[in-house]
Amino acid sequence: PKKELVQKIASIGKSLEGRELPVIHLSSAGTGKKVIWVSGGQHAREWIAPAAVMYVIDSLVNGYGLNDRITKLLNSFEVVLAPTINPDGYEYSRTRFRYWRKNRRRNADGSFGVDLNRNWDIHWCELGASRSPNSDIYCGAKAASEPEVYQTQVYIKGLNNRVAGLDIHSFGQMVLRNPGWSSIPTIEEAHLRGLGDTMSQAMNAVFGNDYSSDLSSGLYPTGGSMDDWMFYGAGMPGFTVELRDHGQYGFLLPADQIVPTGQEVLA
Ligand code: 0X9
Ligand code: ZN
Image (tube, rainbow, N blue to C red; front, side, top):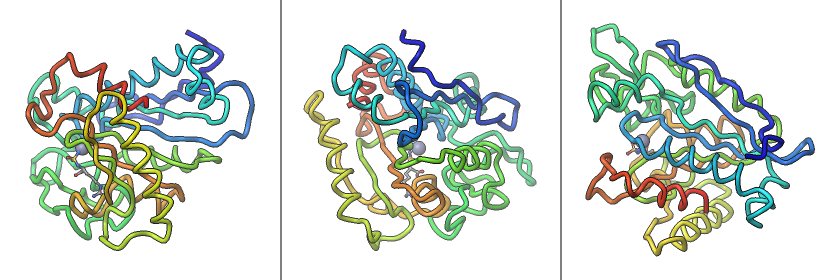
């Protein structure tokens, strides 16, 4: 491993149950580079997301100087990766209930969990979300009420040269661009569409897969989601990437697809 590429290993903060939200900054030497954000694991049961982000971290650190695209990337950009921003939910999914989605907030009515991807401070709970605490798309008591969301918002806003963000989920094989709350394209539609199309094509080139490129609201419109907060709240394009598969295995993606899916995200 090339230690000099690891500019920083830090924590965004602590989850509700006290787990760290780890983050790593990768870049070759030099300051003032543009920053690309990559995070995963907002949804507990989407296990391939944290795994794929970990695969990307490993590939970037070990590929620098060997792989031309990786070398160019890390010479030009700082890539900031947070594999798991919902560690409490992940642990609950791992040990108790495989299909858990939310964090582990104990709600006023005794039910558990806020859907972190409905809790961001942008069009919060206006659409595609629920005010019922028991719902799998519960938006929380107020915008950014959850420590995982609030602290990630603060952390991203502290990245001065931020230019783009990716939020990794599963499943469905889609690269989703802003906006996620409205069907009316942003004023940057041509640019964002170019980026989304390029990313989905790069993913498909690896194994001949069929990732699509669409508006985020094309899947279904939601308020309070991270992709739109990145765009409207942090001033950078925010993509949601839904990884494998199309539903044959769904969240229970077989282990032999972990590395191939990681390779698609790396591309
Ligand atoms: O519903 C979500 O949060 C995402 N899909 S998932 O199956 N991984 O739960 C999609 C979010 C897309 N973004 C917006 N609609 N803003
Ligand atoms: Zn998800």
